Length: 127
Image (tube, rainbow, N blue to C red; front, side, top):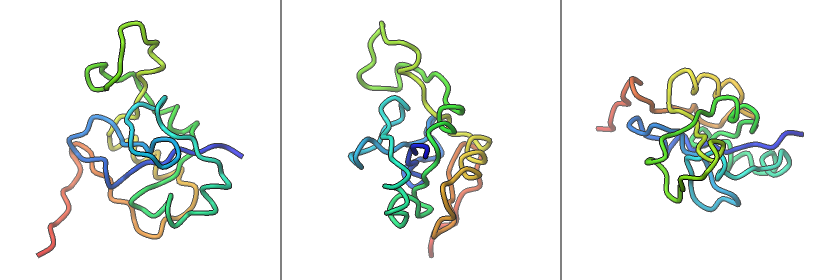
């Protein structure tokens, strides 16, 4: 079974260059793919109501890796000049990327995901 990354739909804002990924062991958020947590299929399936609600989605690591591009080193903390490019990979926050991610979610979500990315329709505020 493949490993998964968990994407925070809720914490990825339209002004973000990169999609927000969960860190290892549910401990915070990351933009760099190398710093994102890898979650087993069994763990995700045992807690779908936590990892795959629509506010968060779980997708195979291979899908995230295929979409990742080198990010701007100035966008990340802890970057050094001698780091390999693989340490700077991040998933761009674009419409096409979201289409691919949503097509590869581990299971249907409880709520419909509403990703924000540059150019996305703004959600109506509650009255």
